[in-house]
Every structure is written in C-alpha cells, then in structure tokens.
Figure 1 (cartoon, rainbow, N blue to C red):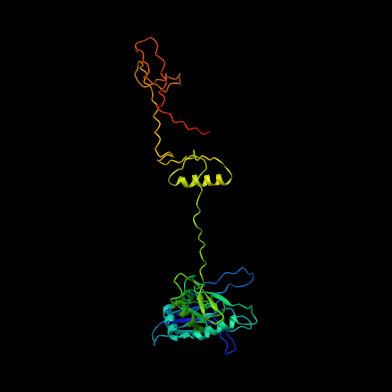
Figure 2: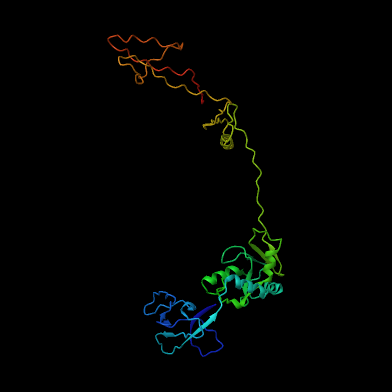
Length: 352
C-alpha cells in the first residue's frame, strides 16, 4: 500500500479524463517537512518555465500512520490567470508488471474471428491499393524478439501486435502508455491479448527461427517461403598444357591448377607451374636436400682463434679434394685465409 499525492489542472468537463500535471513553482510540505518532487525537465525555450514530469508523488514515509495523529499538508504554487489546479491524496496498492500481466491473461483473449475479419477487410479494401497478401512480423517492435503474449489495444486497427510482458515492464519503469506501433494512447484498460496471433505463435507450422508470416486475403496465414539456395556443380579444371609441367600437392595445387586453367583458356600452348610454397613435398615428389652450412676456415694465428670469413678466392679443383694444408704458425708472415668449401651438390632448374 502507498499514499500518493497527485496534481492535475482543473476542468469543468466532468466526462473528460485529465492527466497529471504539476502547478508552476509548486512547493509541498507534509508535517513540516519538504516533500521531494520530480526534478524539472530543462527547456531551451526562452521565457518558459521547466515542467516537472507528470507522475504521482509517494508520501507514505512522511505521513503519520495512526488514526489519532493528524497529518498537516501545506501546498503553495504560483497562480496563473484562468487556470485552476486540483490536488488529491490517494491510498493505492502498487502492482508490478507481472501482476498486471496475470490480470491481463485472466481478462481473456480477443476472438480469432475478429482478427481474421480485420485481415480480410484490409486486404479487400477498395480504397487502398489492392494486395493479395500482407507480410507481418511476429517479433515485438520493442525488444526485436519473438512475442510471447501478443497484445494490441482495442482502439488500434493495425494488425501488428507487441509483447504484453515487455510493454508492461517498460511502462513500469517509465509510464508513457503509448502504443509502440502507432504511438496512440494505449492505457492498460484497453489492452487485449490477440487470439489469432497467439494461435500462430503456438502453431507447429511456424519454426522457432521464423519471425515473419504472410497473411492471405481469406484470413489465413502461411510461413514466409525460404528462397531456394542456388547450388553450383563443382567445375572440372582442365590440366595445365605441356608435358613438362609439374602438379603441386596439398593446398598449393588448387592455386597452381587454377592459374594453369586460366592460362590455357587464354590460349597458352605450354605453361609450366612452379610451386614456391614452403610445403615439405617438392613438385617431383621428393624433398630437395637442404643446403649445407658455409664453413669457416680456422687460421692458426699467434693468439689462436677463428678468423673472420675470408673474401672469395679462386675456385678449387673440380675433383673436390681436400684443401691444401696450412703453413706452420711459426713463419714470419701469416698465410692468407682459404676460401670456403662450395656445396657438394647444386640443383639447377632450367626455366627455358
């Protein structure tokens, strides 16, 4: 239970609903204590006083909850010519969004035939553009998720629904009570669960990943047909022309064959593909021998140690024999360093 303080502008029309509105420069004291009012919303218009958000003020904690103790309420505001104000103190029971949802479910659902007739009237209306079907979403426009409790105000004539649970939760935090589809006023008393869309959501013909349906002129519905996936057959790549071409293995063969096919299509008579990848297998099937490391000749010097790499010298004899022996270290002059040994095998590739 709560005790609320509410303001509204005076109206002589008794049948007209009046919305909450605070008087200008209002000040409220309850039992000689200042009541906390909603902060004014700033405005950029010159000469216009900022207005407070129109919502009730909870004053339960400031009141004396005893039948023998009085409560003094003192209210002041700036008078305006031609405007009167009404203040009321209400004893209310606060309901959560889940409580309102349960009440809405107990209220019942709108007949399926009502929505079906509305679909037929809209799709067969002569004043509008003639259409044979209409695509409608079953996801809530508020949360962009599939609706659980499809709901629509009784005074709205659109077919699109919204989720009642999410709508009540949003108005619990910030009460606006506007329809999320057409932005018209949608108070709680006008909300109704739509039986037609409730049957659509519970139907086995609509898969869980589908969020759209198609409404027909006769009032029936069907899922949105999925576009047929166009599958292309795998194209056979022609072999590279020429007997001297090599075929790479693994992933590199796809690139080489594609390049060979493009070259053949362009009119090339003889194309040779060379695989420059780092695969373990070579195009010939056997791995090439790794190049030997370059040796450094140790020249015997007086201090002992390895000499830096010598400059290139004349090539050794073709026999590949061992290098001549180094002179003795006791000589007057140090012998020149010998050139490094060439690799034992060199693989030559003729690119012609």
